[in-house]
Image 1: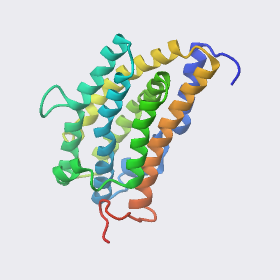
Image 2 (image 1 turned 135 degrees about the horizontal axis):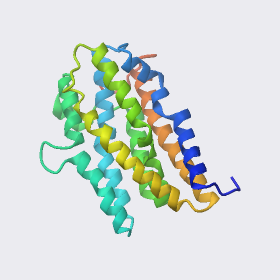
Image 3 (image 1 turned 180 degrees about the vertical axis):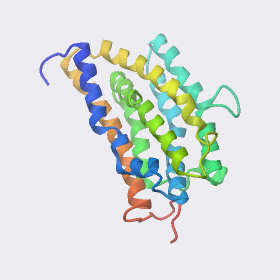
Image 4 (image 1 turned 60 degrees about the vertical axis):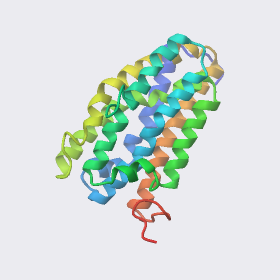
Length: 243
């Protein structure tokens, strides 16, 4: 990349990354939303996704800790409240635990993360390290998968309600809040990237950061598909391992 893009061209390039690489295109989501998984496989998805959910506040706190921009911290800290809640029993993590409990998983087992797939664990931990160690612009840009999340949320809720008799609207309450939170967060982050990616190198880094985030989301589903669909090889210690 040698030419500086306009802000609009940069946004177009970022959106093209999501159109090609966002994990809504992964075969596992087609199975999940289409009612092709059994209860055990849905449990495995929810349990492993919890590891991602519970680590998001750590990622956001790491981003906030490294900036002197008070306005960025002021806006970004709402993400912590959204996930951790303003008090006990509140927030997105608690709503995700409601989902796992409704699916029949033991709450303490889920919170322990003992049954998480190694591939999922490594991918999520890599995300936290990326946000901690790369430039602030790259850290913010990596969050831009939220641009694409409302579409997959709508597809997920409709598909799971239609296809699984053990799923209710209350089970999927987590996603209701995200339909408002994700666009709000994405709008701020996109504006930040458009304004702060001022050189071709910075623009390339922002695009690469979003690509990295899409890849790690995809990698989590690769791990799920390999362990619980085809070939169905659950690694030692993970949920459902029979060794």
